[in-house]
Length: 240
Length: 153
Image 1 (spheres, rainbow over the protein chains, first blue to last red):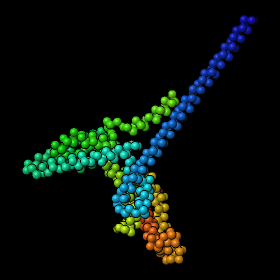
Image 2 (cartoon, rainbow over the protein chains, first blue to last red; image 1 turned 45 degrees about the horizontal axis):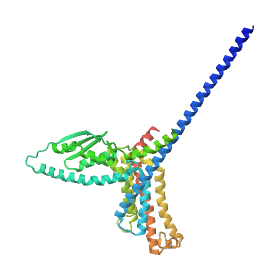
Image 3 (tube, each protein chain N blue to C red; image 1 turned 45 degrees about the vertical axis):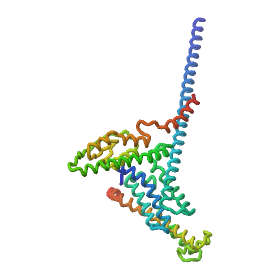
Image 4 (cartoon, each protein chain N blue to C red; image 1 turned 60 degrees about the vertical axis):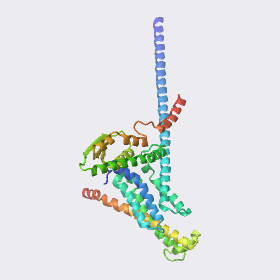
């Protein structure tokens, strides 16, 4: 009699213990879930704030850069420097830079605009020199009685990434006499070359390297990327 | 329906040229009384810049920039500016478009008021011309879609 009572009591106590354990596990699980959910929400919020700030900064910088360039263009066109016309110029450039802020610098990184423009201006003398040199070579080809030409179409895969750099390279190739860009398809250039020397000059890839240098592409380190990552790293370290 | 061109060079160069074409159009409008040009010519250049965007970037992307509703609004707004300035002169006991009378409101001598009045009228003309140019182009270029729509319904 007493033994059975004892066994029943032990049984019930075990059951209670098991229930308590299950409840504890449930609570623990839900706690873990809640913390992970809040964490993902917080992370998402952080990412959103960062991305929003980034895009707003990009829009502001593009607008300011477009405004400066357009106002310069306006003063060159106008040539009248009284207050009335300059005010008109400011208003007009402001309207157009706000409307078309995503056109002129669509694929340029935030903060790189000034450097890109400076490097582009530095690239121009080299391009003009190249045009001179190949001009003389094509004149030699035309004037020599044997006419040693060997027309060919060369195809190469470029290491450049954005559309603007492709266009700068394509137009530089077309501007130098003897070579003409026929088409760009999926990052592959189809270039018609007049002679073997011209084609070889192109194949050395110096022009491509210089264009990559202007737009900070291919194997160049992005200064702006490092600067962008720094605040995220700081926030993460604070979180840990 | 006009689609995006596949040629990346044309697309990119058009994208870069559009702001410059537009500032040139505004220059033509604003300097109409100093040099050749004026409201109509500037408006046509403005319209041409949007048409360039249309034929290189397609209808969908251009509509995001300048929706059809805005074009309809602009085409009537320009006429409203033109007629408004004219009627304002009538209200100031002058003839229709007698800009000299505007000197009372603008607080400047009549000669300067005439210049300002002409500038206002030209801005109105250019806005209307731009909007009508774009709407003519879009109507012609999407005529195919409309005929298909009529056949189906």
